[in-house]
Length: 169
Image (tube, rainbow, N blue to C red):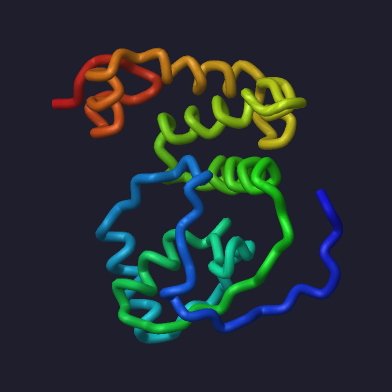
């Protein structure tokens, strides 16, 4: 990745920020968003979002939850650190960050690994190395994508986990 010189934090209107469509993480716990929004109302956004500039707007690379919570909190601007990074770097960084979170759904994790594995120069071994997991872990996650549509829906609804196939009661 490119070295970034001095990084500046800007205050950017929320209307000029958009979620990254490259982020495999799509599902957010609304209760946690509401809790974060309450914190933002009281203390503000404590950690800047990270974004890149595209076509006069800003695509949020990291901080999607904070952006959602800021919108719920009704604030008008957010602190944003701008980075000059391309699509593949964005995807790799988002996958690394998501893999470090406890609340990323395994299916969304799988979608991220699969998308990145299809890019030139990437495979399960390289992804495993980048995220600090075994190649088997990455491969097993990607295999989740082979579930039939109904099983995918049940899995995303947490009716069963990646480690077991029986339904919760």
